[in-house]
Image 1 (cartoon, rainbow, N blue to C red):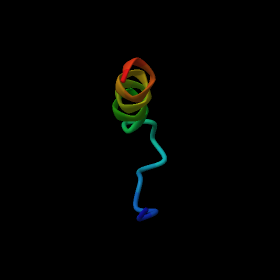
Image 2 (image 1 turned 90 degrees about the vertical axis):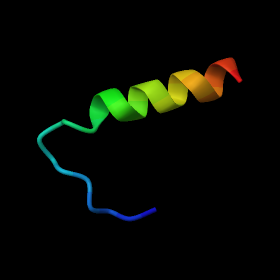
Image 3 (image 1 turned 60 degrees about the vertical axis):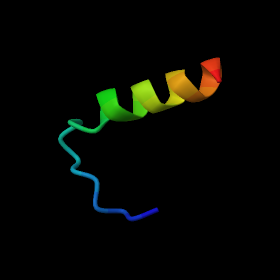
Image 4 (image 1 turned 180 degrees about the vertical axis):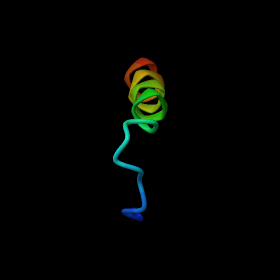
Length: 25
């Protein structure tokens, strides 16, 4: 996994959605 994630928190919604999908899958 590339560590080029912005530290402004703009990636949080993306990760939250990802984990939600994984949890329901």
